[in-house]
Image (cartoon, rainbow, N blue to C red; front, side, top):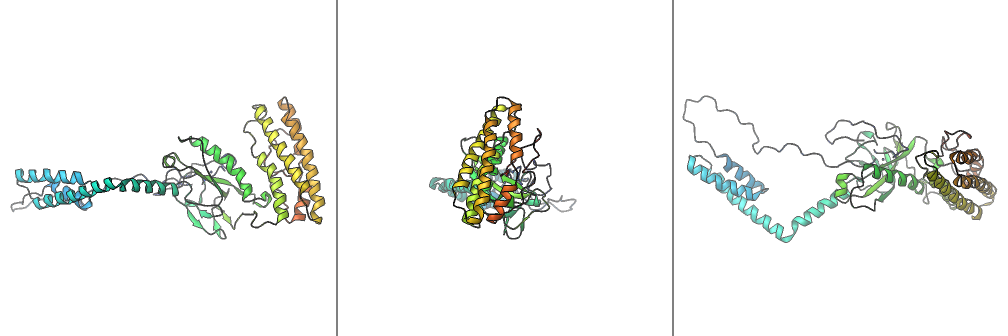
Length: 407
């Protein structure tokens, strides 16, 4: 998850293990919802005290195997072992004159009953049903914690970085740590693809999927970023493939309040049509390669081609929609600006060297101004404050193309 801050080393102490969301764009999920088992409890609930000095004759000791046989027989946990220990105990008691014959007999009988029950369970397939249920529970309560689109939750310790073992669902109207906006299943491989690959897939897809939930990117607060929960190597073995995408505050102490959702449920037809068009560009911009044009010109040219194609479709959608009278002129101006920017992206896609690529990219930055978009948005009743950093200064090699340029 490359755009949000990388997971930090913060690991608050607690009985559940390290915690933290999830982002890099990550809640990245849960690295193992199962705590390591503690030491096996002793069958004896009390510490054995020494007898000390006694002037009287000591009674014969109770055979330890007889006690163990009774315990295993009562628990019905390892019945075959309980029966075996009971039979061995009877032989030792007779040979050594120890006490505990009744315990050994009772343990043997109870273990025999338990062994018979285990045979019956195996014969009817109940063990298989139990294991299938266990795996289903692991999948249902794995990295996604059964979270669905539109739900909000609090993370352990309030942090969305690192690992987490549990979350608490809360109403979105109040304060919360994260809001789920999408979920998808990873496909294409039976074996766990590795942490880096899982993170790469989650980062790429979650940043694109956000536009289907918070369609007006200008309405998302500047301190909100994308995070996600991902499968772990352990949960993958149990069939967990789900990645859960969410919004969270980059300041874990601040959190979120109220829902960030703005889609077909809350937008009118004109707002929806405008945002569907401009988000084509945003989604294409989010596929920018990690390497610079000097390092990988081919990938950057392909990226420029994707943006150019998205802008072609965007301009057509803006021109063809029957806008109301008050919005028609400003939206038409946006479509004209989009077409001018598209031409520069197309020229960047055809660049034969990095310098030429940067030349056309710099022109994109000069042409990408918010003026016409602000006017159109105002006419449509949408947010009119551009996201910070969406419009870079033209002419420098340090300019980066983020999303939400929206000319």
